[in-house]
Image (cartoon, rainbow over all chains, first blue to last red; front, side):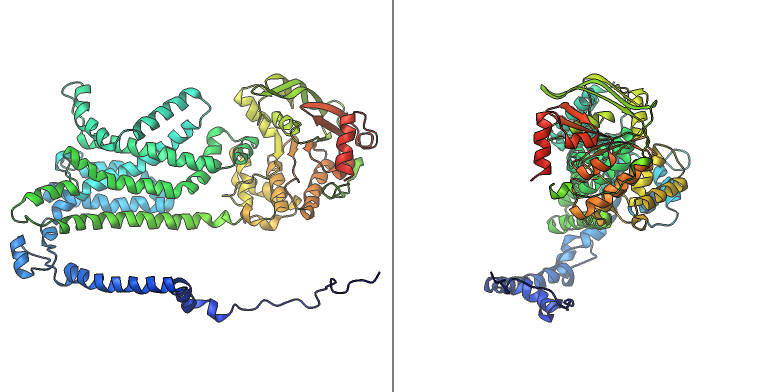
Amino acid sequence: MTKDSSIAFVLKEPKEAEPAPIATTGALAWTRENLFSSRLNTALTILSLLFLAWMIPGLVQWTFVDAVWFANSIDECRQLSPGGACWAVITARFDQFMFGFYPEELRWRPVLAFVLLGVALLPVLWDAVPARKQLFFFSAIYPLVAFALLWGDGFIFERVNSSDFGGFLLTMIIGVTGISFSLPIGVLLALGRNSNLPFIKLICVTFIEFIRGVPLITLLFVASTLLNYLLPPGTNFDIILRVLIMVTLFASAYMAEVIRGGLAALSKGQYEAADALGLTYWQSMYLIILPQALKISIPGIVNTFIGLFKDTTLVSVIGLLDPLGIIQPILADSTWNGLVVELYAFVGLVFFVFCFAMSRYSMYLERKLSAGDRH
Amino acid sequence: MSEANLTEVQADRSKMQISETEVAIDIIGMNKWYGDFHVLRDINLHVMKGERIVICGPSGSGKSTMIRCINRLEEHQKGKIVVDGIELTSDLKRIDEIRREVGMCFQHFNLFPHLTILENCTLAPIWVRKMPKKQAEEVAMHYLERVKIPEQANKYPGQLSGGQQQRVAIARSLCMNPKIMLFDEPTSALDPEMIKEVLDVMVGLAEEGMTMLCVTHEMGFARKVANRVIFMDQGQIVEQNEPEEFFTNPQHERTQLFLSQILHH
């Protein structure tokens, strides 16, 4: 039998790597691939461009070019520029939007608290910050500092009533408190729900299912009215504190389920390896399980944070003057009667800035933590 | 012999000493059920210090479950397990005490993907043995050199090959300075090229006198290293013998069938 010479093959010289063809890289290739890859795509691209060309000039005209930034009433606004936005209402009521009815001469205190919040957040959000340990200590005592600054301690700082709080100050207080406390409580609830101890598991499941099954507004009404019947008469239980507790519990229940998803995504092998090395339950949770589960859960966690932050506007329903609560009297005020879009657009913009920042930060965090993920 | 079981290893049996007085593990009449399913039936096993035992058997025979009972990854319902003089009960303190002395390697390595290789190795010594970080790192580097990958210390597990990961997993266990090592199919998830590098590390351990229980189908390893081979089927120990006798002259017909299937296809 003769050998079939067409099958045999031996590589004689190694093949060098070559650069990719020019037409497949760079901006031009990107444009062609993403915007003009087919007839339908080209048509859609052109249509979108036309739509933008139709929309944007008018929007810019109304928002910026024809807008009135300073005026004393809506009539003055309309006289100055009939077709533009009347941002004067925002500039005129800016302080109220920010602080509610917080005493004017004491407003440096919330401002200082806000600046210090940034300092307290630095070591939490950024691991390359210098003197991180010392800053962490400050983060730990920040809640007390903030409380003393905002409500006053009665010694150095004059007391301020909860009923004077309002605007974005209130949003920040509820949002930041809810966010910082719902995560640890949510972690504990998620671990409890996965626990082998039936009693702990029962408590956690009941809590999570009850809180998730009830609308936040209902809980807020309970906080503002029903609680008065349950508490002994004459108890003074601060309304903001009640709201803080309710919002935190509400977000914790959601957080717990998000984190439970992360826990479920880990392989059993991780738990077993930690056990086999002799780590205790809390050690293996803290060192092995939670770092991985929380990383997986980042999108869900930030989603819950953003939801919580926006849900703070619900407190206007029980009479607290958050930004939406501030809008109500302005709408009814004859000086500004007739303005709606500007007010809601402004509040929406501020919320967007905060939520978008959270979203960007979560993406940065995900990228950073995925360093060891190349499998 | 099938390809996967062919890996040849060199081992020096004269170095492997078995103690005549010190008992490492004593399993007496151990039974385990999953619900109503009787997975381990009356297991009796007496392991002296320095023994190298290979456990083989078809999948579902309970071999993994048995060694996982030794460090309480699985709970047994009846019978007695004594490890290094400590009886396993539901007492968490004793379980932790035993786990400190018993190292384990898994089929899928189970390294901690969010920690570097070095951190994987120093974690347990620092947190469980309360070793200072610097010392733990020295110990870790020592064992990473033993398994021949000190240069990978600062990488993450995901960046290593399977064989390298398994060697790290062995080093991680060794950092706790265990008296007994359990291996649960350590080479089953590896490419043929990587099996040898892992087996070589295991041979080295055996030559140093480590007490080892290995669930494996690496018959070359069993021949060269084990002093006892155990065959399990349907939750029972069917046959055990010295490797030479076990392979050349199996007694039970189930063993004969099993060996003919894994050795001649």
